[in-house]
Each structure stands twice: as C-alpha cells, then as structure tokens.
Amino acid sequence: MASIDNVRSGQSLANTSRSSTRAEHKASSSEKTNHTSSSDKKDAVSLSSQSKAMGEMQSKLASSPAFDSAKVQAIKEAIANGSYRVDAEKLADNMIKFEKELGGLQ
Image (tube, rainbow, N blue to C red):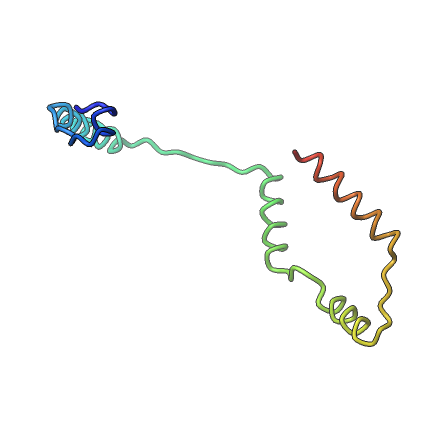
C-alpha cells in the first residue's frame, strides 16, 4: 500500500492483497455475527417509578404552550400605548444573575 508520502507527492495508490484480506475478514465476521444474532437471547428493560413520572412530566410540558400568550399580549399592548415601564435596577440585577449562572456552566 502506498504511504502518505507517496500520496502527497502525487503518486497513485496501489491496491495490495491487504484490501482483499480485509474483504475476507469482513465476510467471515459477517457470518459470525449472523450466527450469533439468530440465537434466542432477549433483552429486557424496566423503568423505575421516578422515570415513569419524568416521562409523564415531559409529555405534559411538550403539550403545553412554551409561553403565556395572554401575558405577551398584555405587554404588547402596554408597549403600544406607552404605559410599559422598565425597572432598570431589576433588569440589571437579573442580567448579573444570568451572567453568574452562565459562568458556572463553563
């Protein structure tokens, strides 16, 4: 088989008996795999009550909306009529809290 240096210098790769050996090995491995898989072995899985509860919660969350549309509509209306006010101090505190949480993830 050609070395990496031969490939870089533009020489073509030569097929060797190694590739035919691989094909033979693959065929024999395939036969072994087919023989093993035909046995009557069965796998079993059992879920704990906690995992079942988590599955139920996930289903409930997946079926519920991702946001409160009534709250979004109220905020849109407040912005449109000019009555929406931003508490800058609360916003800054929340931004700092968020940054600290992100820092803990790294």
